Image (tube, rainbow, N blue to C red; front, side, top):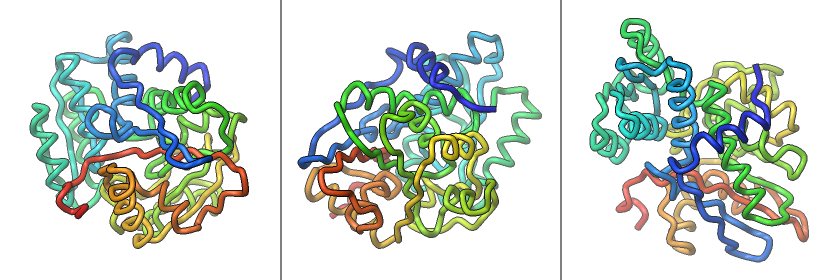
Length: 306
């Protein structure tokens, strides 16, 4: 199964008015930020969540049983927000390691929050069991066509907002965002996936020729901590020849600090990962290359930025 450009365009129509058209800013000659951290709930995730729920509502799959979702935090926030907006209950499974900032926000969205295990994969298994028992709609964090198509609307906006550009740097966890952006961007620019060395599902899949399970650790594990790249993402990154770049935790932490000091952008570590590739030299832009960095998440404790 794949996601097409037409799927992304339909998603844009479906979620219009439900999500923010986030701004782009040129922060230096040839360097532009796409500020998805200003999206509802503090990350790009509501795009996919709304597209999944609204599609299911149209088909009759969304019932009074509501939804279940598993998340490291950001997807859960988005799914709970979309469910509340559509008037259905949400049960969100998160790891016990989920940061307090994300847990507190989840509880303000009227979600039933269940903490299970130490990482996303364990929360996901618990969500699957709950979905089977209840008949609620499962909203996957990254490997459902409607979710990927919704995330791809970031790419459509970039094509309209950012003028001519050569490269887009995107943080990768399970791959929903990069799959959607690569599908939307197509041959208009090079898409580069940036991952932490300690959570590198896309890099590992490209090396192995298929998605494979692997360990998850590091400072960005709460948002980029998928053990395995999604099948839809693997298809998209292969089809669109997405490049893979890895960055160390120290580079991510430094990029997060610099985003705050230089641009007053309060990001979580996952939200700073794409920028870390530029600052650390893991991705070296050519002379005159026009680069867009997707700054994708802001769910963090601001006191840790000082």
